[in-house]
Image (cartoon, rainbow, N blue to C red):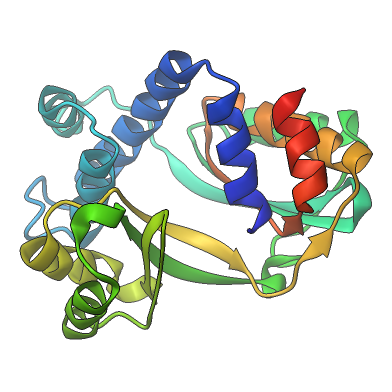
Length: 249
């Protein structure tokens, strides 16, 4: 299991779901607002907005929240947000990609840099570690959605590149550029997805021990806690033995 997924699983097992969901909704709303402002408020005519709404729906964000976020884009006092990607290394040589949506690059950059410094990481330049990842679209469905064969057939028809099915569900991978259209086609065939998102998937991973794993977990949590940070990805792997210790702690 890739480090980002392991981190998410551990955080959910440790609780605080309500606070995490509230922060997630705020970040999803920001992306919807920025997407709506960058083009038309009609998702059928705005691919970025359509994708943002698909991701929000997959996370069970209330419809009223989505509509408020779209309407907010019409307000003249909305800050000008820009997408910024930060890259660097965590302890153990683990590569980190941090995506932010900010109206103050200096503020966000300062926070991200301080987190890297606090946890003995090194913030590099944009492009310094992204070659260790593939930027792709990832759509997940629950196990009860259908058989592996049925989901595979639907994914092929939708233009996906790969499907992995197991007892935990179905993970469908597609090109980043076609994520919106692939997700829309899958929704027609299979219903609403469990999640729809663009991810940085590691093509090179680093195994870490318990000490480094704990430090990395704290670092990722600190980055994700910042309001400007939208997503964080890492290329570490944890053995089953270390994973059990971390979830039990």
